[in-house]
Length: 316
Image (cartoon, helix red, strand yellow):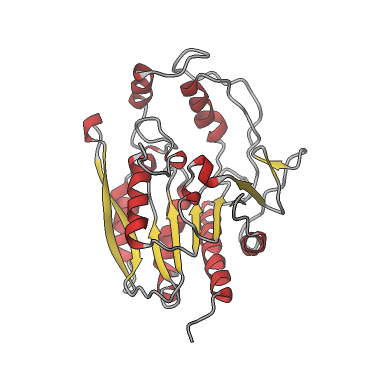
């Protein structure tokens, strides 16, 4: 868990929001650190279960910035029945949150087929491939995709997802969005955001452990509780700080806080699903391994679908 300290970001001037020059300077600092084609596209194509089909729902095109163009892939149930509930799984909205992507891939490889017999599944495992490759929260335009899930979104990543879901899964019963909270939120991404916006950096303690972010409008406390119980068998659950908060938000129950997802333009607010949550894994914990982080994401997904199925009345 990181300790509070004064952070001065190397781009921009204190109290002044970034202009085009500062944003270009930030982009010039970003380096490709891993390969989307090798780590995401290749496993998808090699381990796709027979019950699934791959859909290219768009391309993330940053060629005008001297960057690459990335195919955006979703995995959909090959058999899609209107009487079945629909489950939406999203990962990699923030490309640097690794277990969100790898956990979704692990679910596709090992669990998709058995759940596809009971629910309609749409999985978008890596929404922000440029962010995944450069280990970034933002896209190249210094936009956080997870604040831009709304109509006419300026973030290509969010706009493509909205179009995909509207076309393939207009009615969703369960949506789980896979994320992480990392120490770099305090060392890099928080300070960068403050510098970009010309404001002071608001440091907060990073919770050591797993937690969930529900929706203020659809809190579903019993659902959240069931997921926390399942994940607690895989990794430890974050405890609140001295003020009873996680990342500055009041605890609703063990391991759960709520956000105004629609108001904030979050991925978790994009559907009308009655059951919605966002996972937050802590990969920097000395008490958790990368394998546990991936397993925590998968445990959330399987527990969430089990919860849905236990309450979904089959057709007569």
